[in-house]
Length: 186
Ligand SMILES: Cc1cc2nc3c(=O)[nH]c(=O)nc-3n(C[C@H](O)[C@H](O)[C@H](O)COP(=O)(O)O)c2cc1C
Picture 1 (cartoon, rainbow, N blue to C red):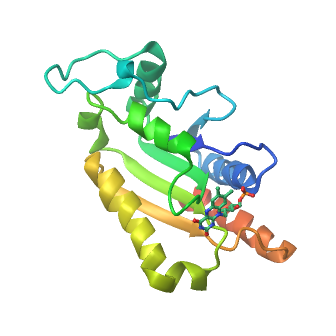
Picture 2: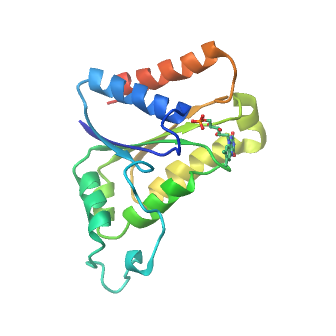
Picture 3: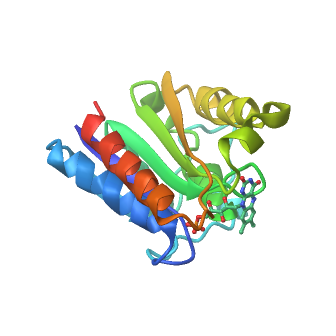
């Protein structure tokens, strides 16, 4: 299987980045092929311009070379994995810009055959996330609203809780979980 792993975080020494690295190590152990897109360091421009607008009359509209390149990377992958911190119960703006620009018309026919996995790092603990149905809201948003709108049939969210914990054991357990997710990914 070929996985396109997309990560976003302003810092390479972040927990998010370390989680992505451990997940990729697990994938490789499992003999999966990995294509890594590091939105912040690969210079992805998340600002949506008129050039990126969908053309409802002309679905064959050709997008910018940068966006076409990203669409081809999706087309070449079986699985799309996103690793990101939870910001305001949503994805960071970098990832939102990627989805706005790349998950566009012309690609959507492809999406039904892709598997999507959202690995989301949350500062809140399990109790905080379950209060007021926050976790349900988030998983419903990512699986049903976003992936479903893109016609993806198989979408899953893995939440890593309590990421701001000072417990070294807890952080180590999150990294181990990320590795196992990669190892077990099918
Ligand atoms: C702008 C911003 C918004 C955040 N919003 C939330 C939130 O809505 N829910 C939550 O549980 N944590 C929230 N957090 C905490 C992050 O999820 C946490 O900092 C991150 O998971 C830690 O991983 P990192 O060290 O890789 O950044 C927020 C953090 C920032 C900077």
